[in-house]
Image 1 (spheres, helix red, strand yellow):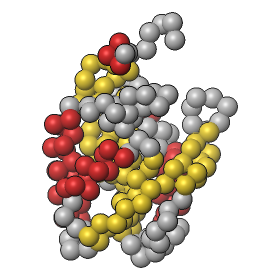
Image 2 (cartoon, rainbow, N blue to C red):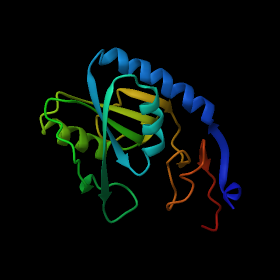
Image 3 (cartoon, rainbow, N blue to C red):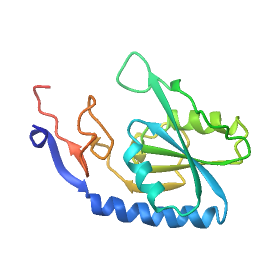
Length: 179
């Protein structure tokens, strides 16, 4: 059962909704009267992307990318593989990458450069969570929902072994010693 392994609720759904509305106002201010392409990074960013979309009152297009960073360990190797690329032409467009969490920053750094090289007008990053303690790449999100400590986070799209994405809040995962 989920409650057996999910720790204390860190960020409630109400807090997430309020922060999404605040960030939407920032995005509207930054792109006054313009249009944007939201690029959701599958799968974790879906819930956050929906919240941002619902609150931004601009001309919005959406698309998705699926990427993986792999290596011989559980840590990111910095080698990024694109499993699903964009279907949308972003040349000359304002692009906002929507990410669930910025941790090492390796994948996000690669993606930002990759999209800039496709002649986007600008590429910004909107992350639900920022975990600066894990940062390896020199990258910061332009819009950040919340900053979190260096612990394993689940809920609101973030998973552990494909579980807990559906939680309507953010929590730490409590891992027992027998795992």
